[in-house]
Image 1: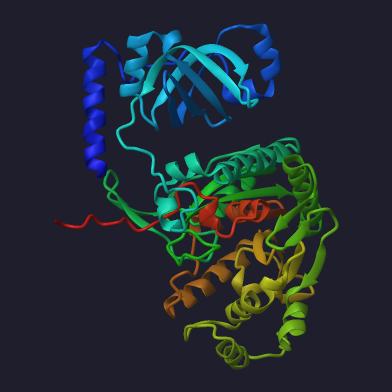
Image 2: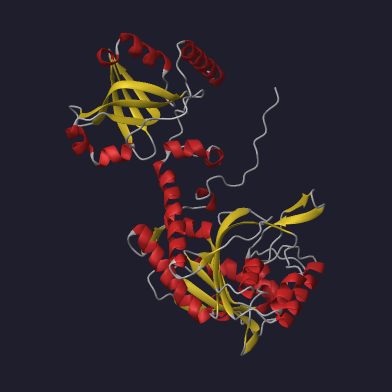
Amino acid sequence: MALEELRTIRLEKIKRLIKMGANPYPPKSWRTHNIGQVISDFDGLSADRKTIVLAGRILAIREHGGSTFVDLDDGSGAIQLYFKKDALGEKEYQVFSETVDIGDFIETSGLLFKTKKNERTLEAERYRLLTKSLLPLPEKWHGLQDVEERFRKRYLDLIFNPDVRQRFVLRSRIIMELRSFLNSRDFMEVQTPTLQSLYGGATARPFKTHMHALDMDLFLRIAPELYLKRLLVGGFEKVFEFTTNFRNEGMDRDHNPEFSALEWYAAYKDLEWAMPFTEEMFSTVVKAVFGKTAVVAGDREIDFRAPYRRARFQDLLKEHTGLDYDYADEDTLRAKAAELGIRVEKHTTKGILGDEIFKKVICPRLIEPTFVTAWPAEILPLTKRLENSPEYVDAFQFFAGGTELIKSFTELNDPVDQRERFAAQEKNRAKGDEGAQRMDEDFVEALEYGMPPAAGWGLGLDRFVMLLTGAHSVREIILFPTMKPVREKSS
């Protein structure tokens, strides 16, 4: 039967219920327990012989003569309901049989018992329809291979796939534990603008919009960094923000245009403080969520117990590619990139070439937690230079499971150097680099009032959750990932 026919039949059932004086969409439920609570204390609750009221969605209906078995799910668990004609009365049982469908939400009250097959069951004394569904749940959703369909109809994905639901429960717990860790160490949570008149804090192409009230163009935030550092200027010593960022760039297993991040900044700290702090944070959070510091990612176990490996960018580049970054010129790096099949633009500079080669060759090999330090200065224009090697900056990127998770810096607080670095970025932009950072005079002015030395830290939250939960793509751990709409076919 076609969906539209089924929908018409269910609409007729709604009309029948209304005519009988029933509300197919009542405003509340009188539920006394969720199903998870009932399952966990079934023997005790059934021994009490007290009426239990449950509510949830019907996932299956099985009729046997004068009785009907129903599988009810409320998200916390599933249980069997038992409806008897003798208990409900012939008329009420007939209405139930003729108007209630799979997918409907119902409220049922009764006593608990176990069947001969030891199935936990609620024997219904009465029931009430809470929500009449118009479309039937798809019969073949289990094992659906079309991931695009799963993401477009995530609500069905959550109904039918407990593993998917659990992944988002874990995501919530991971965020909760990260927040708890920072709160317990005197960090203050803040909110900074999503709409910005000048984008910055990262090298990326922004989304642009227009504000009619002020007749001005605005950009969706690509990073919160410059506003968070303004708060250090203003006297706050430890701040953090869970943020949604937007970058108008490519999509792949590690990237979604709209993504979640966590950034924190701590005054009077540097990278030597930030690395053990990261080790403590991750080992604490992972153990709190999973009961141990090790997780399984693919066919590998990754242990977040400290200490983590440390290595320099140029050392890893030489080890895995033979390139000596200190002596290699731009042409040498460009030739190596071409050999590796890396597409680069004419304006691509030495630092970016080195970074792209690193991503292609070395990043996938960094399975165990690893701090990679001393990055080329030109790719991180908001970072303090190393005193003994000014062509590099005092930064680390943290990798695990073959994925970059964190960028962390000893923050640049010299306004003269910052202006020069912004100017160099503007030159790159003039050569065609759309993602180059803009000159932000307001931020430089803030630095001129004085910002204390500080460590800054940014975590790609989606990638972190992806790694910890064993997902294969960030779209698996984003409830509603960015997707192109499906156009209706014209008749």
